[in-house]
Length: 219
Image (cartoon, rainbow, N blue to C red; front, side):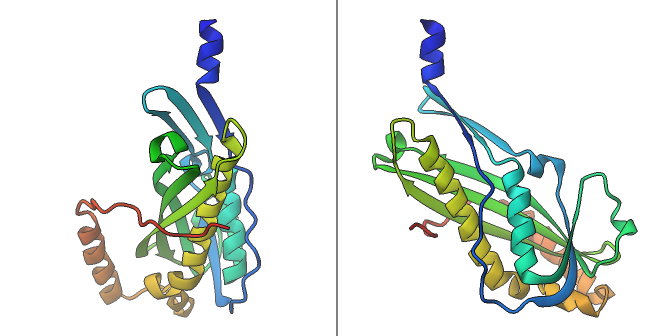
């Protein structure tokens, strides 16, 4: 009986590979490498909700698929590096390494609504062709889905996919402006730009206590 009760208080969600509709945007004319860290490719979030119900959310390969597809829409050429690949063996104008800096979710019991919500905070480190840090950029995304069925696993899964799509919209619209990644097609960054990026990185090390924005895509 105890085993049955424990099983009834646990939910496992595996996020399916998201599909991003083809956007009507002009590609940035540079070659980009995407390095997928091991912890990013196997991201799992576990949390006990209200001290009773345990949720395990596995984003897994969905993250890697998300960035491969998105960057394929954004740049002329994209290569994907595994954690074991040496970037020096590849030719590119810019290298992007994504990570998940924060993941939060809420269920109806918490929000007192009929909706599941997911917040994902991505941080992307951009490097030039010789390994200099060119930019660091954080993207906060949100997705919400109405509860369907008794368990709600499908609803939470959908909320996670909507959060990824929200991130995709932000990246498509703001990445070049925020990181100047398009300028790396002209060659590695200069010493002056490198010093400016190091100063900006020092500022970003200050604690950030802001909450995720409430917004995003929900259809």
